[in-house]
Length: 246
Image (cartoon, rainbow, N blue to C red; front, side, top):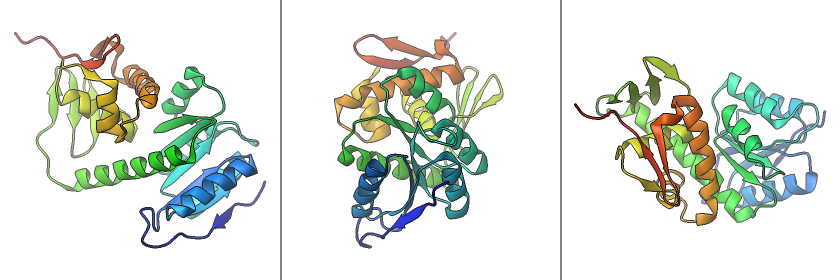
């Protein structure tokens, strides 16, 4: 097992100052490039190059976010994600070398919040890290601030304060991204929201190249709350279906 190591902390005035990011990537060149970019953004960074080292680093260092490659020696990134999420919830940006939607859905299913397919731009990676951390901050604020009553749409219940979802009175575990996506759709039931609108509202992006990310998260969300609840409008976007009013 290769030991993890830390990169220096960036300037305190930068946006990511004092936030801890664990980069798990077995290609040292890629790992160093990611670490250098995140260090320039002001993050504290540790790197690990295999599955066991990643889990150990996550347990001892308590990172606030993981950038996690799928293909790793020891055991793969999916197993790392499972084990880390079992310890404590932490946002995960998954990296995959294959543009395979099945792999992406599996990653989202074990607790990853977002994914990127190699090759990718370091600028976009850094932007996604910032977005994921902002989402966690919003979730923490929502949990402590008083909100309106639970939203009920038929047998679907969305508790904003506790960030909990129930279907037919059974709890459904959603990742922070999935929860925010569902809340966005539920804000205007039956109204069609374009992929670009969802990217802007949920991911804070304006880049249409990320629309496949929306599609994959929608598929993961359907698996958890029921495929019939989210309607696809081909060429446009998605709408949350609700029971017809009597």
